[in-house]
Length: 194
Ligand code: HEM
Image (cartoon, rainbow, N blue to C red):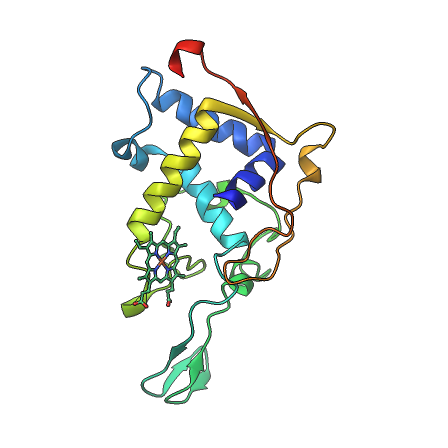
């Protein structure tokens, strides 16, 4: 959630687009709820883009091959320790145009799903040991982010500019930002909606 907020605030046009989507969806004055989530295509694309650039871990949890297999011409012997480099997958210039740019639009298609059918982004892993909490994690992210950005405008604390927001990563199990995000929230709704 912190990484997505950092990228949205660093790229104010994307924040505006996500807010416009929420404004349309919540125009009748109701509070964002779980049943609204399938319609949040732009915000879901922004979360997926955040996972591409800032996966929860640089590598997925280590796995072991139970039989010899061949992937992209490489032989993986039985009982090998297999590490999936999610950080490298998300920034591979052979796969992504402008890989370092935060661009949720790259995921806007007919259907936006956090799980990527082509395995270009694997935020929750895949196969038998994939994350069982993925639907809960996704709902919590979209509900939390949706409410934060629908109800408030966000900007870096003056005199900082959006581009001053640091998106360097620190070492750690969950790859936190090197500089914890600080941001200024300003109400953007009529008083009676708070
Ligand atoms: C956005 C939030 C979350 C992300 C990005 C995430 C990501 C991951 C990843 C990458 C794995 C490793 C998959 C692999 O080994 O290939 C994993 C495993 C796991 N996650 Fe999550 N997770 C999230 C939320 C949750 C939640 C909410 C729960 C529980 C309610 C949960 C429970 C687990 C468990 C139990 C495993 C181990 C599964 C196994 O080894 O069989 N996760 N998660």
